Length: 169
Image 1 (cartoon, rainbow, N blue to C red):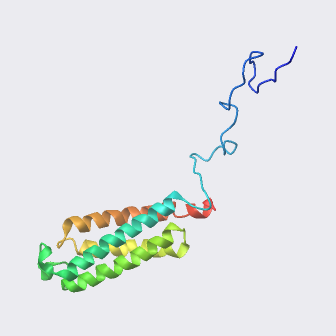
Image 2 (image 1 turned 90 degrees about the vertical axis):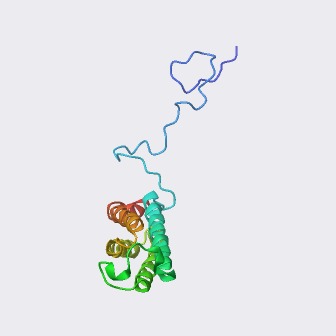
Image 3 (image 1 turned 90 degrees about the horizontal axis):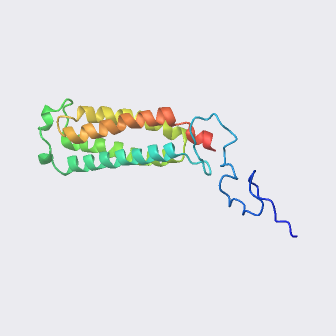
């Protein structure tokens, strides 16, 4: 009589086929319990770093567009330039938005890769962007409020989750 190989499942019936991988292997990382949540890091990449980088690039694009619109003409805005909180022409506001947007796009790339200098510049730039848009609210209320909200969330994401790329490596 030929003896069949034993399966890795306890209390299995003799002659019954063994379980084909179901429940026989533990998932990777199951040994290190207590982390609270699972975060799979591949080659030093963190999801929050890429998210903050992408959000910073998006804020930069919005700022760039606001700058280009302000430079193109003042007919788009709801109030004349003299009625803004800070009395300056729309071309001045356009250059401010344009410069903040270009710097934000460049900083977003650094944030995506977890560069420490980009984190510091990102928080400062998001605060400056929020202040510029707060002063610009009478001219474009919806766009300014949208960018301010994104800036506040960006500051949260950088300060609270900014160290995760370092831990992922």
